[in-house]
Length: 164
Image (cartoon, rainbow, N blue to C red):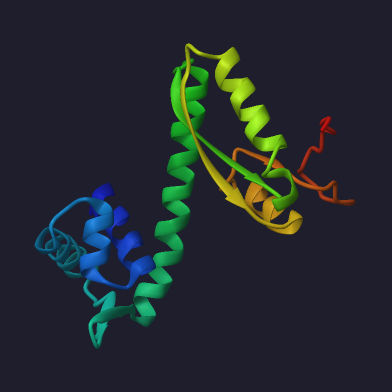
């Protein structure tokens, strides 16, 4: 079992379609099929079953998916931590915000950040949601930063007021 197989498994579980998953992974469909087949052989069970033109997780595939997704999340957290500690100057910032901040506030702060940190090669990925979705994404470490309304009694989350 290798890391690529786990990434492939996760993407196929998400898309439930070999061709679409292969396109998103930028690999050939036969390569994806081979990787999943090897993974199933190593685990000794089928992880997917065909359903028309799509595939769905088997009972064992669904159980395995929980562990794969958690493992990939932990690994990504470790990679981010090492990169931040070693001062790498490029990366992706996952930024979430509530809809009302999308027309002026978020574009302004991102522009200001890029302008004042020209030496960094940072890309941004934006997600719009409501306050509870932004907070949940922060807790699950899907977002690096979130802009939302302050919520009372949110343990583990630090709220800092920002000016509009």
